[in-house]
Amino acid sequence: MTLSNWAGNTAFRASDVHHPSSLDELRRLVAGSARVRALGSGHSFNDVADTTGDLVVLDRMPDAVEIDSAAGRVRVPARMTYARLAPQLDAHGLALANLASLPHISVAGSVATGTHGSGDAIPSLAAAVSSLDLVTADGSTLTLARGDADFPGAVVALGALGVVTSLTLDVVPSFEVRQYVREGLPVEALAHFDDIMAAGYSVSLFTDWRETRVWLKRAGDPGDELPADWYGTRPADGPRHPLPAMPADPCTTQLGVPGPWHERLPHFRADFEPSGAGDELQSELILPREHAVEALRALFAIGERIRPVLHISEVRTVAADDLWLSPFHGRDSVGVHFTWIKDPEGVRPVLELVEETLAPFGPRPHWGKLFTRWPSCPERFRSLAARLDPEGKFANDFTRRLLGE
Ligand SMILES: Cc1cc2nc3c(=O)[nH]c(=O)nc-3n(C[C@H](O)[C@H](O)[C@H](O)COP(=O)(O)OP(=O)(O)OC[C@H]3O[C@@H](n4cnc5c(N)ncnc54)[C@H](O)[C@@H]3O)c2cc1C
Image (cartoon, rainbow, N blue to C red):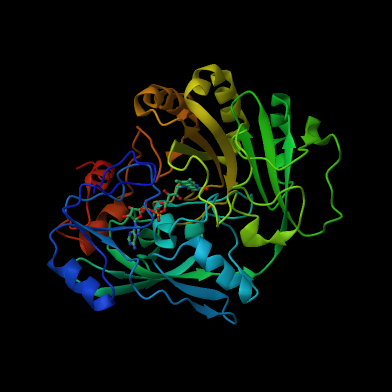
């Protein structure tokens, strides 16, 4: 059976797939392999996780979570999914600051690609990492922690430095969130983008570049309701799916019903695979926050070209971080996401048009999604990869394109 990613658009070319069950077994495997790479939960839409050698899946490694409430941190095994981690944290009165739209993704894979949710003040999931343990090319172990010189290069690292075995994440006290959907946001309201995105702890716009809905995830005072005609919108009269035509069953509870952070921050419920699973492709371009309104207007202007191959777009805000390969490095950002129909040939010219339209705003691609324009690789990441993996054991076509090799 061919192993492929979740979307089914990338067949992994690995000669062997391994499921080590101990650190020692993993170390021997890496040391003895000429070409090796870890696979997370396989939710990336490109070949970032591919290898022609040994693909390592850590799903049989010990999966205990170590919670240190006093220090405000949790140590998690790399292959742990957010869906499994979150309820364990919540049971201890703790939370992660944010989650992605889908909780089924692995922590190590999400962190390696700079995966994020939305929120003006909240950085990517990778920014919550305070230390990580990895097995490097010769099979030895290495721990890097915040404050170490190499640490900012090793968090969003695309699997290029070694196999991460565990990560320590910052946690915060558990909190409740209420989720609301507002429909019919007029294009003119984009002038108020900053106020709209600041109206909740985590706010997303869903648009087909004609009709726009606002997804608000609000924490705090339940008395703090929005005006009935907030920026020309109306409250949704029932639960909604991000894709307007789809039933809302896989979605987290809406209509302002309070609930724990991990049952509201993701759009999709942990006990459901989103319906139509795999019947889509995704791209996302990340822009400096200050260009948000101009960039969104430019995309509305080409909406007719985008719509024939689009399921839906999502616009999110993400706070800056200091991780070298992070799309949010050094700048507060707006992420413009595209869920495409599963037609790679039809999507490609439209993606190229979107990239061209956004080029004046300095976009960076989401590493786990489809893109055609490669950013340049920071020199210090190149040096770090060459130092930790001199023979390019963890390199693959994706990282070679990034490194210009
Ligand atoms: C339905 C859906 C919804 C999504 N929603 C969001 C979203 O809301 N926000 C967002 O930003 N992205 C989103 N994504 C994209 C997704 O978060 C990224 O593609 C992420 O990388 C997936 O994690 P994964 O575990 O599946 O990683 P994989 O695709 O398995 O791997 C990604 C990278 O991580 C590396 N890696 C994995 N495990 C390890 C390890 N142990 N050690 C070293 N390297 C490792 C791999 O080698 C590869 O380079 C979504 C994807 C899907 C399919």
